[in-house]
Length: 380
Image (tube, rainbow, N blue to C red; front, side):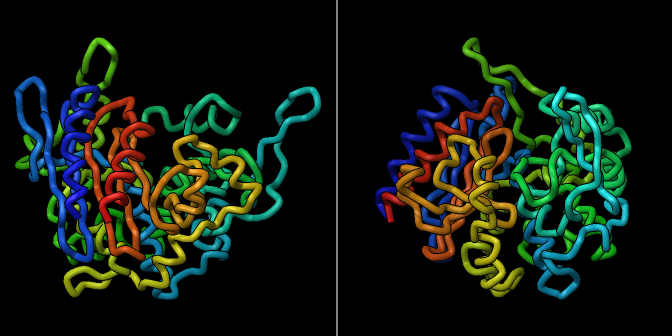
């Protein structure tokens, strides 16, 4: 795949125009065919990005959480169509915010319970905090501090707030995968971090992936920067989340990882659920994960421009229509990305995976990710 060499000048151009540094790996049929590190992990100390650099992967945590939940699904511990309230009773008798003709807000019971599948597919009626509707406003208010929060506490707090819409009627990016993490804890009897370690990280030899960074590895953490046309300024807003005494282990965000570690995880999925003799998931389960689960009505809300042509599976984007996307990837290619610009591509048909890391906000994902993808598939 000589065409992968085109990635080197592309990554260099990214750093010239945006992030302080970036890294990329490409693995095909179990062989790592490309690995590159460009620029700095910390501008102030002139520390270079390299194989040992640790990154905040933000929402790429979601794929790990969905994988963990599907492991429990494969053990017969729940069904996708089970009502969530059977496992997390705080979600019984869910209410939904509605508006009358005069714009007044009132609540009524939801038309049906939240199903476990709704958590995977972001169709639960849950939201993130924000200002777009009353649910977002209330979520923002009650979760503002987050001090001492655990997944179980978060789940109970979110359940006390009326939903933004009836479950199953819309797609909305939300805390759904954090509630899925709470489900994992209840069903498995372990904290989410411990389940990740015992069932995924240790078996795959992912030694540098965790929610809280050990003191002896702090110096390897890549600095996060805010980008403006005037330059980069360091962002320490998320550092508290990763200290040794932090209590929250997010299912939707919060993991730290190296590019090598996450590449192992990604290629396990690309390889049908097995890597180096260790099986994490069955290939049929991964196929279910990487199939669009949204109806045509739900897809109208799944409208981020840089995801045109993609559907949404069990926690991942899924390539449905390359002509709409303008992308040369395989039907069924899947993955997700993170707030600071991290990104993963997984393709079970080609047994192909790629992991890109950087730490910058805004992240330029709509510029970076399609270009990387097109070069990779052009080299096949």
